[in-house]
Length: 323
Image 1 (cartoon, one colour):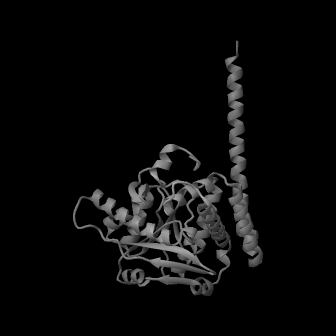
Image 2: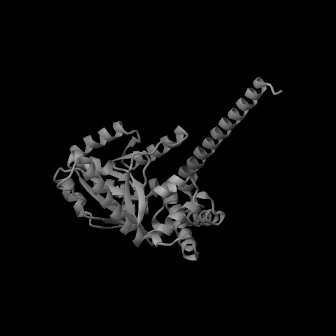
Image 3: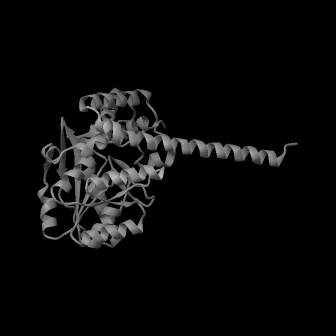
């Protein structure tokens, strides 16, 4: 007969070992990001770019779960039923773009104001500034495209510091590093905590200030189902809800790279529908946001850094991108 107490001790030992491994992994991640903001930040730029391109290619060749999910997402974008050579080539370009984003995140605190402003190519930015100068709040809604950290620094240097939210990361020290990084660029950063963050963003918008949100993937488990590249995806409702509640302008922005430059398109405001209840209006506005994102991603798929699940079918099947 087995000894229940012995079994409990073994289970407890396994649990403790699992906790130890988790703690060690968190410490390693925190140390890696700390090195990024110290060592990588000070490296000669050509060497850093070569190193990150090599890391991107190595990650692509390993073909882990994130890359498999990326390729599944790209199949949706390209209208393909399965991964083929075109998707594989495109996924490699995405990894290069994604690692460029991280390289620039680590080095952005070193960039001068002249570089941040001078290498940013923006179309339609007058829509942002006209609303803010009139005292109306603006919600800039973005997908995970290009370098939205740089776009935020550009907006700050144009004289418009803004509020955003940050996903809670583990360990806490890693989250603190990201908050410090963004605050160092002039952003106000709120932890992703539902009602508290929502209320403070509403206050900023009513005061005529900008709020920037990356909203092409739901992190709350209370998102809205929208049609996206011909299938049902789940996106956050927060940007539309804030616009309805505060009267702020909901303006989509899509981002991409143009050689050594950063590029952005500021799209037309998404107005609140004239008819329907609150939930119906939020649904319609979020669907229109998805339509704008869809067009921007289709134009620059190599700069959409989505290695996570977005579509409802993918979320429901519980696979890592291989199913």
